[in-house]
Image (cartoon, rainbow, N blue to C red; front, side, top):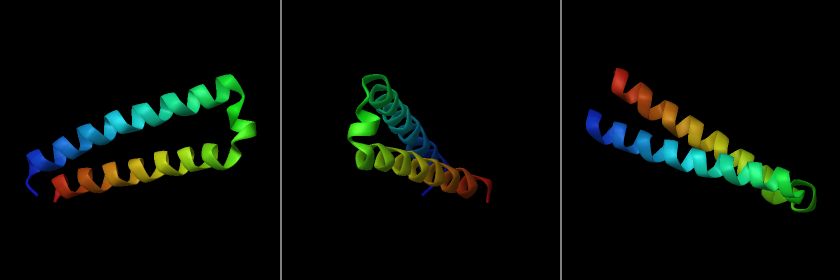
Amino acid sequence: MNENDHRLVMAELDVLKQQVASTIQKFEATGFAAILKDDYVALHDLEQRITEMHLAHARAIET
């Protein structure tokens, strides 16, 4: 991948992370975080994986 490819992936990951964060907020606002705890935890796990992937692409640009 070249630098532009990495930046494109990072931008897409940013959008995805915003969508996941929005879904987490909706879960919390509606009380589903308690009812669907496994799904709520999975959303946080996904958010963490997105952050790790974003960091990996940022590091690839630096090298």
